[in-house]
Image 1 (spheres, rainbow, N blue to C red):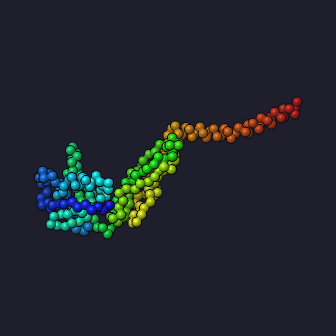
Image 2 (cartoon, rainbow, N blue to C red):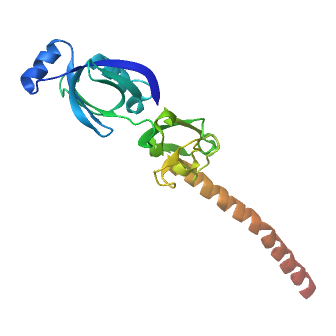
Image 3 (cartoon, one colour):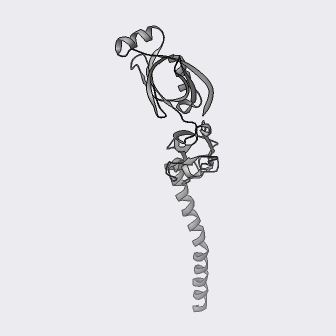
Amino acid sequence: MRKDITIAAEPRPGRGKNEARRLRARMRIPAVVYGAGKESVAVSVSPKEIQRILHSSSGVNTIFNLDIQGVETTPVMVVDWQHDPVKSSLLHVDLKRIDLTKRLHVKVPVHTTGDPRGVKEQGGLYEVVSREVEIECVPDEIPEHFTMDVSELTIGQSLRAGDIPLSGSMKLLSPADLVISHVVATRGSAEETAEAAAGEAAAAAEPEVVKKGKKEEEGAEKKK
């Protein structure tokens, strides 16, 4: 999703560990900008501003403007980053230029709402299997997420990628039968179902036994 956000970047002439330490001392981190048929550019950016992008509602699918001092202003996306394994601070980031006229492949989160009938009425268990789907679309139509209502799911039913409604230029790239979530039977719900089925079978057979008994009684009376 494209947002009206601009982050300032400074050209970075030096490379290596010493340069990275000097940048971090200035509260900046090294980054590389590439793509869109242009040469890659080494820059430095504010880690706080990049973290704000990564933790936003649209996350890595956020398209924002990068203003490289004295070079260019271009729309970009975060495509890779590195964290310190101990401090969890951001160490490096890769930014990709985005051509707003070309389609992109992106992964979009899938959120579900509602309490499935299979859980409330049948005692089943609701399980989330996949939390995102991959789609293709133009940059300006990337959704933050898809929201699907699972209230009507019963035991044995599932929500699949092909059930998600797409609009505009969106095209599903994930398999249509990819399971997003489903309701499965627990041991207790399975036993209750089996008992109910057995009870129905016994009730259906009972009238035949009664009829058979009446015929036997009538035959015995005739013999007497």
